[in-house]
Figure: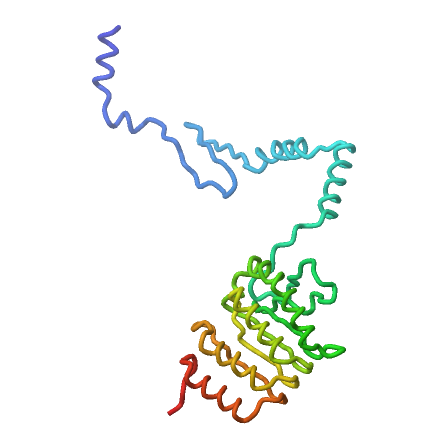
Length: 253
């Protein structure tokens, strides 16, 4: 028997192998699996959707099959999440307006000191009754307490500086001089000064000249509005000469 099997294997020719039935491959439709069974060539097609869909539906139903008690708890949690206030993020540079006050003198409210468009705005203009030097000196003491928190919360104001509006009051040189000293102490440059229609005289020119020569080189003052005061022509010429010679501004020759 072994000899006969060996002889049969040895006498198998390529022609005989060609008569072996081959698996017939047919193109499958998209979304279905095709299996061909030799030698009949019958094709059995099973749509993937038909096979997987019932199991997937059963899994989804089992996953989200909530009892009325569970549904009530979930609804209550969602309502609670919407009712709880979300912690507010600190204002970023360029934000519209951000109050920066802490507890202090009740006379000075948040409208007087704000960070707007990335810059400290100190707005004391057109006070009623008009602000006097004594009032400004008291405000400077209050401002000296506020600025550390302002600089801590908005460190970029040391670059963008302060916009100072004291116009339409009865402020003298002593109060404005102290304002510059407070800003300098906290390294907040004064970029714009509006102090027109006050009671400033030539003594304030010395304060302004000193500031022009010692101001930060990268952030020089670009606006000084002090018309309608008691500054003489000589004082005005001294201020113009200092602006031309301090080295912070271009000069036409």
